Image 1 (tube, helix red, strand yellow):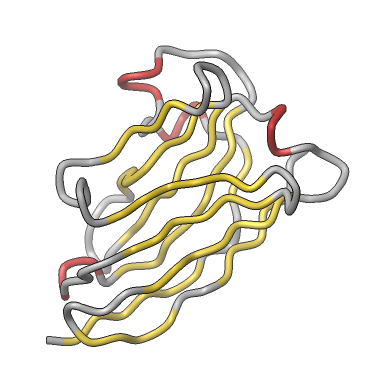
Image 2 (image 1 turned 90 degrees about the vertical axis):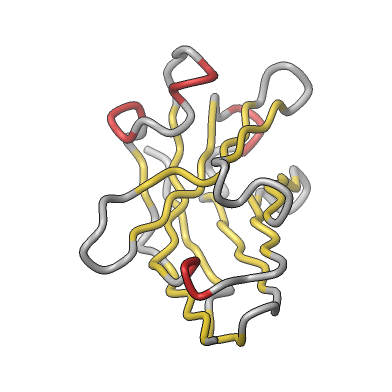
Length: 131
């Protein structure tokens, strides 16, 4: 089982930046995980995938349209950590952010954001963006 611990959330004003981190348990090397995705859930809304990272293909990434060009997902193998750099944050980015790991192969262009593929989740980190 993959244990995940998120950190880095906080409160910022619109236009600001935050970097979220997701530490993977030392027993599992992050580069062996098939796919890792950052999801978020705002109050009253469904959880949605915002950025996904596939180990194969040299680290193929996917983004939702709402964050493309503002968020960047990356992975640090040495620190066994997944990151989400969030720039130009807007009030609509306010949500609980979760990282998740999928260990089984699936179709990339749709699977990166399908929660049923992800059996390992962190506890979440809250991001609040004020206008």
